[in-house]
Image (cartoon, rainbow, N blue to C red; front, side):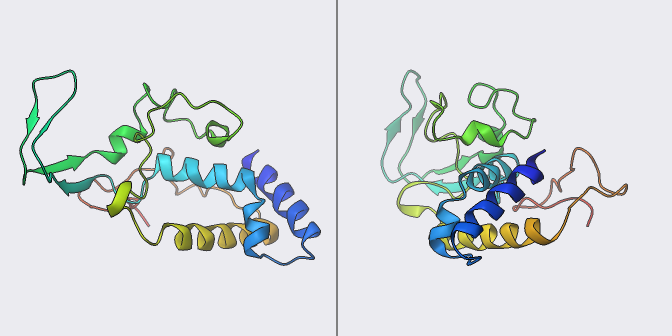
Length: 167
């Protein structure tokens, strides 16, 4: 079970750091990093990104031309759920982010924080906060799904951010 693996990893790492949830300790939590990455793949913070083309661009292997100044919508949710990049995309599988496994997907098919010069500047800060919260939660609590929770989780379709349709 994923939560049990997280608990064991957090316990082991914190034992070697005298119980201190430090930056260094969080860096050693590789399975947690994989689980958070998989969560961000399944439920990206934003379903799409918007960018403005800065110069005329011919899409490789096509006749599609994007003109300078044209808005381009990047369908992050669709990329993250494309079986060409992520086999069995609706299965929660943290191991797909194991750094020891040769990833077969395109480097720009995983974009929870965007990419390049306009990517989210709060990425590292946000991830550290999430890791600290998850480490604290899995040490002290056993989390479970309530009977009221939709499985699979349904998201609002009219929201720019990814949020559940029910609280």
